[in-house]
Length: 214
Image (cartoon, rainbow, N blue to C red; front, top):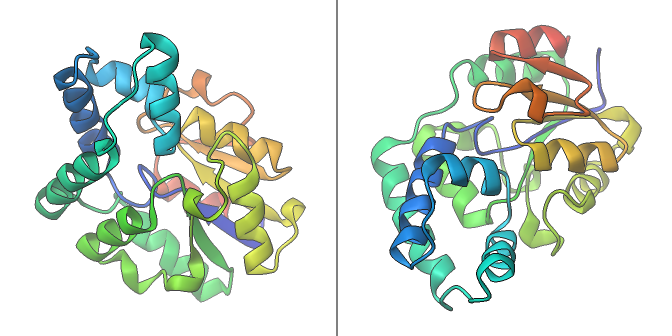
């Protein structure tokens, strides 16, 4: 189906960052006295804005994370991105096809603008996403699963929600897209299909996504 706007999540959809960031998040939380495995991090925090990590830790333990938690975590993540980050296999073909077909697209991520930009520069995806196509939970205050970010991105790109499709790989992102009244295609490379309840369609590779977006 042809849409008026394709909204991409960033981590795990455009850049293969989820294994890196969740490995580091689990290690840092454990270091701070909140034992967390990689699997715990994927289950509990994948797709979250930073404020949700703080909220969940406080809710579960009654203790606040350090004031410099975000800065330290992002420094570790950015350094790892510079060494290890790659684009998701096949995503550049999808972006090329959308561009050739004249279909507008953007990115709407729970990550900060700095995180998005570091990842795009490292992987070369920055050529597809100028500043007018990059939206962060920083822009709206409430991250996923609230619909605010996707609604904001659609408004800024001049598209009605019902004409948009979101490409997501996290349960929180799927929930946010559904709440925004948008179609959502769930990427099951890292997330089991049964956790992406509510997705309009599911796909396992970017080759499949290119066909879905025709």
